[in-house]
Image (cartoon, rainbow, N blue to C red; front, top):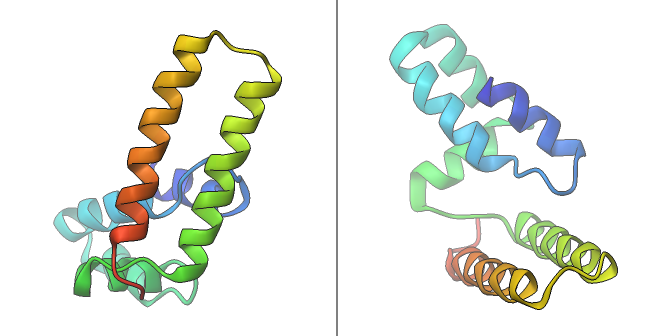
Length: 107
């Protein structure tokens, strides 16, 4: 399920990809060596997992895409004219996420 959500996240702007891939790799490491090895060797899905495991790194491209996705999500909230308290909570959480993402080393 985590691998499927991660794959959908590749093409869906607001769904995160790497956290689901990390979860899938964690689960596969404990259940199926073959699937774990396949996931790590995959040309698209493997590099972010290996980068995270090696040094907790996130690629600059992934950081930019995450920032754009977060801005788009907040923009939709503004367009929908959500209540101020919802916008304030969302802004605080999204800002914390961006700080975390941008403080990680580049892959």
